[in-house]
Image 1 (cartoon, rainbow, N blue to C red):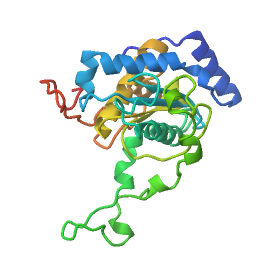
Image 2 (image 1 turned 90 degrees about the horizontal axis):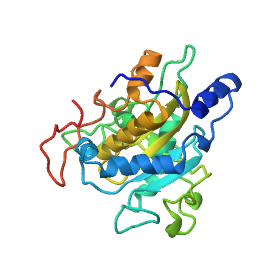
Image 3 (image 1 turned 45 degrees about the vertical axis):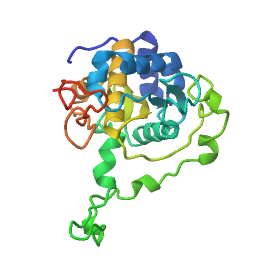
Length: 272
């Protein structure tokens, strides 16, 4: 997918403004309706379902700006917590994933290398190595998989903000998370930064299914935003910066997502 998408005037002007003034983006870059439309498209389109696999669960999709402030929260099951149709805990997890990717990504300008981290890219650096003979974490710092071991505990979620408000308003335009920074670091797949040109404007986080499917779903939501709004996808980012975006530990576009419900005959790793 090498075609380029034209930026809407508002996004292009915003990108120029950011570059010249260093000002922070706002949640006006992408609307709740646009995030909701992209999420429902990925959830309900058969061709997209083949690419995401998993349990075919409903999804929570949260967008934050580049400061980690929550812009929008969407539930593909519809307004409200819908705990009978969507995993309730995934609302806050989706916000964690968005915060992780927003907080660990940089603009790709000047001499800065692109650091478009997805939340799932942290998993190797965050998990300990188990001793195969004992099943215990290997002794000594050298046995840890990377210097980010324990990173998921470094930025705890502000529970007072994360669980406030009426559950009937969750996933709506007035979700109580909106305009709040709840923090959180999450090493599951499902978080992706958002770029207008090479300017980071925020991130999305997806949760509600397997970690792999969450990651694939986030990828497809961003592809839809690329097609509709000019929000850069990974191909465009790599072409513009000369540095491939790191999306996950496998080196693929996203990890292989085994279809479990219902089975299908498509490729096991989604895109080939």
